[in-house]
Image (cartoon, rainbow, N blue to C red; front, side, top):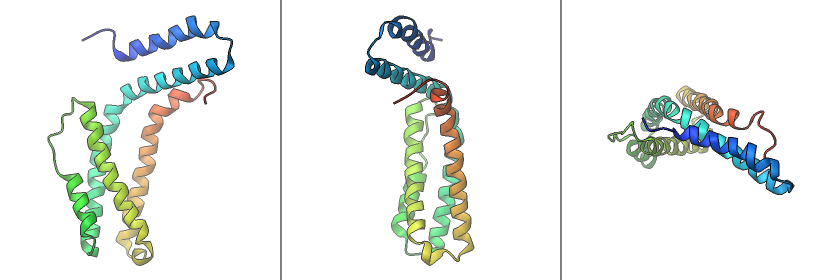
Length: 167
């Protein structure tokens, strides 16, 4: 294992800012900018710690929801472009679980397809609102989005809450 780990380096940057730089700052704007930089460094530390687990939990949920959306749209008919977009997003690639950038890119493709499907569902609300499958799918997407916000909070909350003012 290579030491120090990235989170250790970033933690030491914050410690040095606190002990060496901030005590010498007198300009409020500069102090505010350094404090904001500390928040961003903490964000990266938290992202490094949480991101892989979030993606590993996120992708199966997205794949399931996109499958549900694709099946629903197939039953409705006339939505071939969106069905094709979902099929493209769901196309299985060899996913390198050791490469966080590959995981991030895959999650973004899946999320974008889900958001496009949701946009279509919203636009078709008046036509489809009486279909129980429509309501079930919309509820499942809402539940996913609430869960996604909770996952994002695992990174954001410790970054900012209780860490002083931010811009």
